[in-house]
Length: 189
Image (cartoon, rainbow, N blue to C red):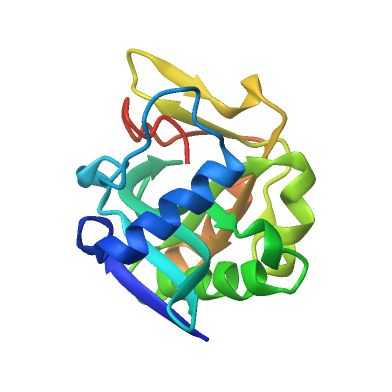
């Protein structure tokens, strides 16, 4: 078993097709044709991480990154998106391996912090991977003209603080509205 990393637009076609099939398991398409083309805004520098066993993708996720300003500090932020594990492989810890590796990748890749949302029932999964819940925190996605706040849904915000600067202001991320604004393609990560 190995973890492979690629810019999203450079994932080999045979692996990308498998990722799309896994995503279709988790989020069935609404009748529109699925595609193995990149799905994220290239401005967010999407990095795909794939857990591969004998040429078969068992779990996948994307890391999205951008600068954000919070509490007067400019920070490099990364977050998880489209995390999925093959239904037949769930419960074996494979997703946990990949999520923990993604946390390490964010820190090694220059992020000051990792911050993202997940559905509330997945909270414990991401906590076991090393992320911390930010109580009462709302991640505001979309754009400043068309905001897309996470409190519209049953979601929690999770974080990991990688740099001294981020750790110093970590308490200011609790019970806060974080203006992420990743754009209109990746409204919320």
